[in-house]
Image 1 (cartoon, one colour):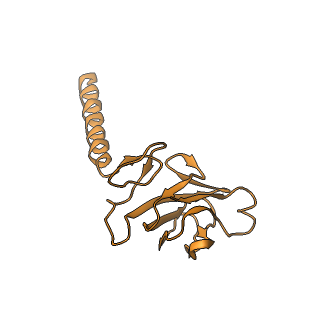
Image 2 (cartoon, one colour):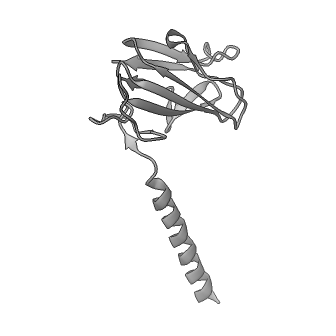
Image 3 (spheres, rainbow, N blue to C red):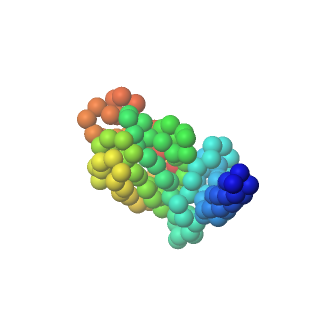
Length: 153
């Protein structure tokens, strides 16, 4: 009986390991700059889809979650989002705790406000260089630290 339990446990662990390896191939770990042909350096972020070359730049996707007074991306709180001028940027946003949105005034970009478990997205072109603040516009979330830097090089 103990042999069957041990063999069963080994089989279950092998199956779980295979699933993790198989699903792990879909994500791309890249630097703080979103994935682009010349790569980047820094903190790992997940890119939802392969970046595509557009007429004026790359298509760049960031996957961000909102929780109690902070944005999160791959374990980094309120991360700097770095893109190149001309990039088409897509923010895929999910509230994991509470009622939130993602807003970037200078590019007239904002997601819908969503409750826990809901997802939304916004797409825009980063056509101006500089450092800009993105934030949550719900209540006093911004004042309580729910903001970060969007950097266009």
